[in-house]
Picture 1 (cartoon, rainbow, N blue to C red):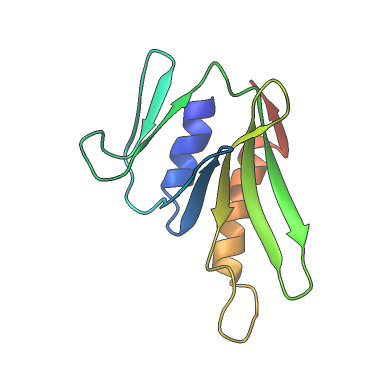
Picture 2: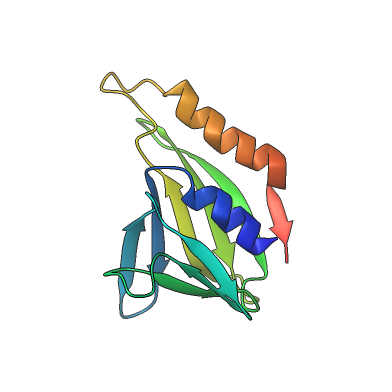
Length: 124
């Protein structure tokens, strides 16, 4: 089920995927990324390409759809956590607003449809 959710996310253009650790951060866009799984490793992107990631599906224990109200806009993301509640991966839906700072309803619908399909909090 983790691979299914990630596959649905990478099909959406302009999702910023962020992996963060104490010493480094990687950011990559979801646009046109392939996804496949071999044993516990889910690979997002082309293994021989300039940027890809490997996600260990045994270390991801839950995911959560997060809507954060901010002063000028609301942010939409799906966040993946390990057994200690530490965020392993964040998938942030970008380009949600037009130049007048109005929500793009077609973009919000993509997010809402995924949340409806998987639920707000998912346990693995």
